[in-house]
Length: 123
Image (tube, rainbow, N blue to C red; front, top):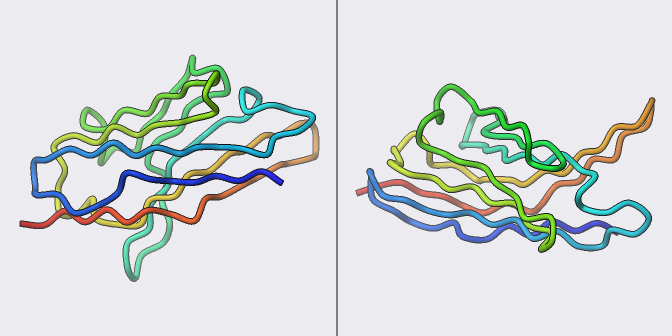
């Protein structure tokens, strides 16, 4: 069973930085490098939103407008890990951040989520 474990969250002051890590394991027939990876976040009372995504081999990335220029997603397929570097954090970035792995082949989708890591930006 595929497992995604996020880490690196915490309390940081506005303007500060954090690096989130998502460690993936449990892949059997198809490896980590076949999955697109994304970071989502959910603040209290709000819907879960896409923050950043990266293609299976890291050649393509996309970001929510609210984080462009401040956040960077990257991956290391040799370590089955995806990262989210967050700079110049703002109070509105406070949320639980979730890692997602997705693979779609024809009409079949494999979709996995981590348990989330809390990020709080406050002075």
